[in-house]
Image: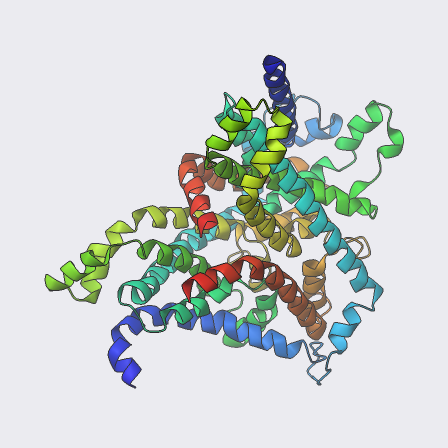
Length: 287
Length: 275
């Protein structure tokens, strides 16, 4: 009551946003947590199931395949879009015409993942990349990319690289622009070559940015959904599902709400574990 | 030696740039073909006809993208605007009016961005059905407002902490009440972060697929990306050229925003990386 009298005015400003968040998301989180321990299958009889749904994720072949695909996505996203982003930024740094090339690599990021998905379904269809492959005599390589596991996952990763490398490039360019000049001058006086300078000076100095970029890429790759849904819907035979897609299919196609909820919780634990790494710093600084 | 290095850097960048532009070039080429032209040749052939606008028209009508684009335009502009206002008020309470325990209020609201969206899908779907908000315009708009608040609060709170407190004290001396301070002193200072947020949130809402798919069904409510993904299933075999024209059409708003306000995007990135 005293709190209200003293901070009532301030609370009036903060409360609307807080109430909306509580109503939409906090209650949702609690509900999902509860459902993940039940066998809710949309038929009305819901019983307590303990950790059954969680255990099943690591036993059922479908979910294990989904876990495996998620792992492939995470590793590939860390390696390629981040690596390419770094490469672009280093190539473009101090280059004449930087603006033009920057825009080119960034362009796909200005499109939605749904659109990117449709574009690459088109490119991976028979008359697309395969047409070129068979023209240059690589007939055996001209497979039906999106319906042949495990190549369907690799094909979608190519699409996500095309979309995502540009943002990482921008972040790295920001980082490179903020580096101190002195170490580079010292290195050039010592006669260090380009590669040597890159390895021993640029990369270590760039570390803080690299951590942020990798953290963001990691968290996003856990949750990849739109691209897969548009390109394969997780198929054929659920071979290209990741956890986010499996969750959607379990919940909204098969109505296994309990199982879907357990997968959501697993995703949450994974992505919070990663975010904790840099959230920790923010919270420690502020509180 | 140095010249060779520069030359090879240019060569590498040019090759990569061509690779990066190729998909877009192919989309534009084939979105311009008549369907006959497309089926008789292949996607790598130069268009013999120019049907881009006719294809776009067909995507708008047959593919029902027109309504989706209108819906998404309303969701994106209203959703971004309202959520920024709510977040600005909340940040004002926490930072300027020094709400006690403000950091915990901030954490409560900010927690909305920490969890993966999969946590929200089923409860919102069920709750929306119970409350009669499923598949309604207001239901969708309300959701987009809610989902955009946490990140807006995050940026605006950071920004407000940079406002010198003497300014607020001076305004209090001049007899301004709290809302007067908000609208006369603080709000005008918020223009840079608000323009960044407008851009971010408009794009985010425009590009959303999963919530549009989950919380709406009918053409009159469904946002554009959910419509596009349905259209893909129907048109991929029988109307690729229409589908591709639809892609071009639905990407235009965000592309314009990105490239006309590019500076703000980079500024926004710097802001979010720093914090």
